[in-house]
Length: 308
Image (cartoon, rainbow, N blue to C red; front, side):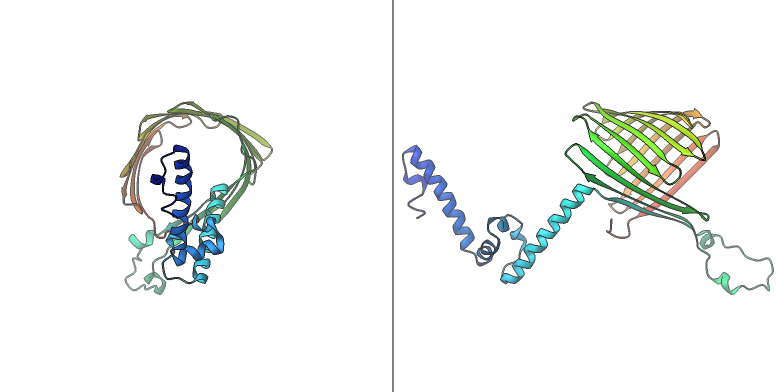
């Protein structure tokens, strides 16, 4: 049959095109039916089973094993689709005071012994949990739900925010948000692309707390200076009120940022440098100078699990 429908056997162009289509279908059918594994998948699920990742199934598997592998692939694909739609994001932060490990207080009395002092005193100062999900309602409307809880020094606060984002055009979107927890809050935000390498945002915030209404206005313009460098100019009116200029550079091996803030009540200059030792470990050094004095900060971060 392949010889009969081989395109080289026909000189007429019309017959040759028909022969090419028939030859391709016959060749594909031969590839599927000539292998027991592919033939079993086709008998169970048809062409969609062949297109769903059958090539990862090891050879010499039974029909039941192939069915289980296919169902697993379908389940993984469905979970990926759900995550892409909801875009869940979460974080958990814990503040630990481990000063006793490095600078242990000792009594001046040489005869004083405290059995508990043999073990270091590690104190949990605070913790916070943040979680957000997105729910696409239409191709242009998306609902966003955000929850936050934090506890520090015996005091706990929490809030729940619900936002609605609408895509106005391929360059512009707008968002409205309401929240409860630490007093009712309201926020309106707009985003617009100002060019291929430039964009801007405007945000209006208000908060009602203890029968007092506070409001603020923030605006920001950003531009890509180089493939790895961004420049930001931000302005805030309200409390606090300030103007900030920022240059940030991010590469595969390091990231650095320089920032100058002029405002009321504080003005400051800050520089940070982060070096990445592979995908799981990075160190950070920061220097901040302002009217409140000089602050030097350093730290190391290591990813201990693959759980996200």
